[in-house]
Length: 329
Ligand SMILES: NC(=O)c1ccc[n+]([C@@H]2O[C@H](COP(=O)([O-])OP(=O)(O)OC[C@H]3O[C@@H](n4cnc5c(N)ncnc54)[C@H](OP(=O)(O)O)[C@@H]3O)[C@@H](O)[C@H]2O)c1
Ligand SMILES: *[C@@H]1O[C@H](CO)[C@@H](O)[C@H](O)[C@H]1NC(C)=O
Ligand SMILES: *[C@@H]1O[C@H](CO)[C@@H](O)[C@H](O)[C@H]1NC(C)=O
Ligand SMILES: *[C@@H]1O[C@H](CO)[C@@H](O)[C@H](O)[C@H]1NC(C)=O
Ligand SMILES: *[C@@H]1O[C@H](CO)[C@@H](O)[C@H](O)[C@H]1NC(C)=O
Image 1 (cartoon, rainbow, N blue to C red):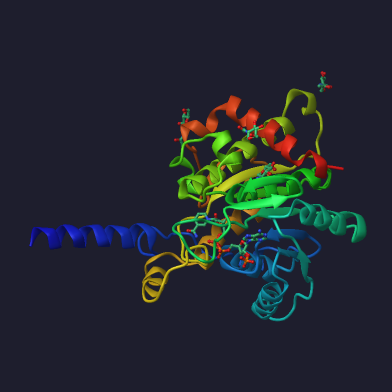
Image 2 (image 1 turned 45 degrees about the vertical axis):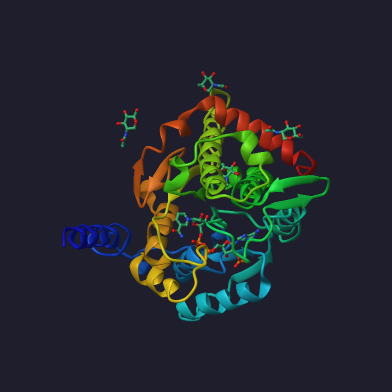
């Protein structure tokens, strides 16, 4: 009897904590208050999950969205959905191929974006990500090769690929006083941090996922410190850069067998709900000049104490620059 009561209490807590219930106060965007016409927004991984929901909201506000995705077919379907959601008024919804597991593809994406199409970026949302939870046919390769180098796949997709993307777009972002949002996760506090492990580990573990999310926060803080350094104090055109935990929500990132998948989608928050906070942080005036912070929903909170270690942040930055150096020019 006691066990049943304890189990029930645990279940209800989980439903309230992760689910919509009491802990879901964030309202949807007031679409008539904002106009993003003429703004260019890059969203990585916008063909599914959170990225697609962010695209819907930003698309409805009239922005020119670049769907930076690896799968053209899925991206085109998402574009159709966003088009319909925006009452078919936004025809500036554009697919551009970006595979974060290929450093060459990232370079080509940026070349297309700024040299060929001559676009300026106002908002960059580094959203795409993968997560390993258990052996699964979807994630069969823990290691990805690029030229002569090999990389831990989660590290490359979640962190290093976006690192290169942001570096290559850096001047463009600064000139446009862009807002950069890195979609991180609260689980960044669970994995510890070992650079050697992240870069050279050939296994696919949940711990590597957590560390890749922590790496995003390190690079958010470190880049912010460079942007706002004493040498740059008189530069007025500056990008802002923040990391954000969107909440725990049901998406394609967790691959469960039937009927667990149904339960998962019932219990957890929706990607639509979690996209609200991301879009608010990306467009609202109150966040305009905030940089180098970690958000949970729309609130600024402290990330893990390990994430404030400046020495690790600097080492990670230097090693990351070294790993991508062949692709910088
Ligand atoms: N779900 C959660 O509870 C949760 C919690 C905290 C943080 N997050 C973060 O939220 C972000 C979005 O996750 P989600 O839950 O929305 O996952 P999702 O539904 O699986 O969507 C992930 C997106 O990333 C794309 N992607 C993956 N690898 C890529 C690559 N190599 N190149 C280009 N695009 C790639 C996927 O494209 P394909 O369709 O081609 O695979 C997909 O569009 C991730 O950064 C995740 O870490 C999620
Ligand atoms: C996060 O933002 C920083 C600063 O713009 C950037 O250097 C880094 O590449 C981004 N990382 C990820 C994984 O999004
Ligand atoms: C990864 O392994 C290579 C080759 O063994 C080594 O040169 C490099 O220092 C290692 N990287 C880290 C971060 O430990
Ligand atoms: C920034 O401007 C102030 C006031 O003009 C000046 O005193 C200061 O030396 C400048 N800083 C740098 C790094 O150029
Ligand atoms: C974050 O940490 C700092 C320093 O440890 C502390 O002063 C501050 O109150 C904390 N902020 C929050 C929101 O917890």
